[in-house]
Amino acid sequence: LDRALDAASVLGSRVPEFGIAVNLSAAMLGDRDVADEVTSLLKKHGISPARLTLGITETSALSGAEEAHAVLAALVARG
Image 1 (tube, rainbow, N blue to C red):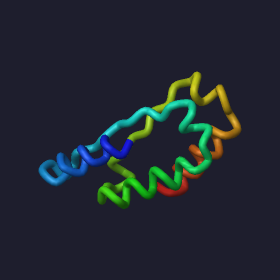
Image 2 (cartoon, rainbow, N blue to C red):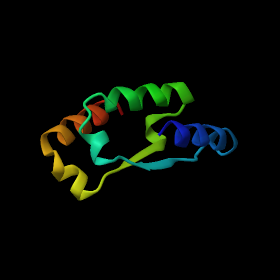
Image 3 (cartoon, rainbow, N blue to C red):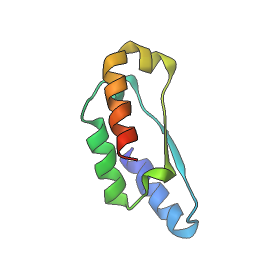
């Protein structure tokens, strides 16, 4: 995620409307700190949350449904 946001920052400086999509793994969805990590990395790279699309697979979401819901709710609350 850090490398992807770094690349997006460079490209975004040339094309302001550039957005990026990154898939979250099942392990990331099970980590309640991932929302803090994503927020921190967005700030580090100067990227608006609106430019980031996070993808998840059904398997990832269902493997730890409660944890995934908590992480997704935290991410939505942050923009």
